Image (cartoon, rainbow, N blue to C red; front, side, top):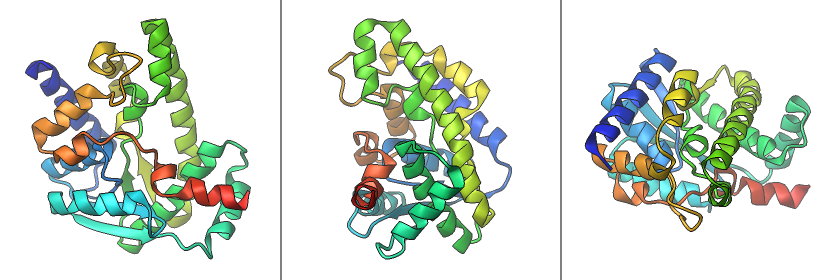
Length: 252
């Protein structure tokens, strides 16, 4: 990866963060993966007062892995362990509020309910997420199938993924507003989306057998000091890493 390309991406990410949030005290929805780790490092380097926020069931992957990475960073880190006793009632409440059968939307809204609850406890009313990176940098497995059919297929999938993510985050913010918390996505701004679409696809995904993907993002992470354990972590979606999906399937 050419250094100039990484520098340009670095600059655009910084600009998007600064345009998205004015508050100095912020939370970062944090799993320890490359996306949230990169966001946390960027925000800290920009001078924000960062608290990492992690949610999940007690024995979940996200809680364990996020602890490892936050220790390497040395950042303030708070954790909300989801109680199995209250979980079914929260699920019922959220389904009633957002009124959709879309499983992914319900799972994400549940996750951000607990993130917002955690943020409020520590006096944080702005939480940043790295949503948009998987959509824009071919993070999902679906991109491995799309690239078999060429660049146009990849870009069409990207458009639909971005549209879904923007709409889903409106539902997420409906839930977060119950706690007086705003969930912000600097990497879904129109300006940033336009910029990233111009980055060559081969800098994001190398082909249908590419299990890592998001290569330029990983390279930038390493360049600015994201721990290699996070930079090379393969994707594990929030609903799976937190065990929310598994718990939800048990009560459906």
